[in-house]
Every structure is written in structure tokens, then in C-alpha cells.
Length: 61
Image 1 (tube, one colour):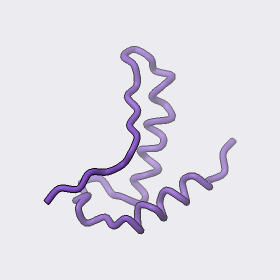
Image 2 (image 1 turned 90 degrees about the vertical axis):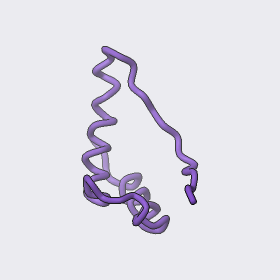
Image 3 (image 1 turned 30 degrees about the vertical axis):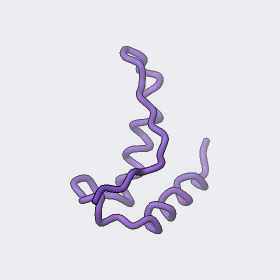
Image 4 (image 1 turned 135 degrees about the vertical axis):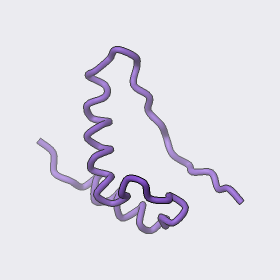
């Protein structure tokens, strides 16, 4: 049985390199919590919530 995620998605516009920088940086930060190749069916909601909280509270320049 498949479950739907209630998540917003962002797709950068073609040829708009300034839109992809933050997206790519976020993806690399997310890889600290969900390694590449990981089966997403094994990641719990609690793990995602913890990663979300840590990334949202991360200090920025």
C-alpha cells in the first residue's frame, strides 16, 4: 500500500541557475540524515521530523 506525502515541491526554471543553488545545498544537507540510495520506505516520520527541525533551526549567514 502506497502512502502519499504531504510535501511541497519546488522545480527550478530552466536556465535559472540562481534558483538551484539553495536547492542543491539543501539536498546535500539532507543527505546527512537520509543517505543516497536509502529506501525511503524505511525512513520514519519521526526521523523526517527530526531532520526537518535540525535543518530549519540551522544557523544561516
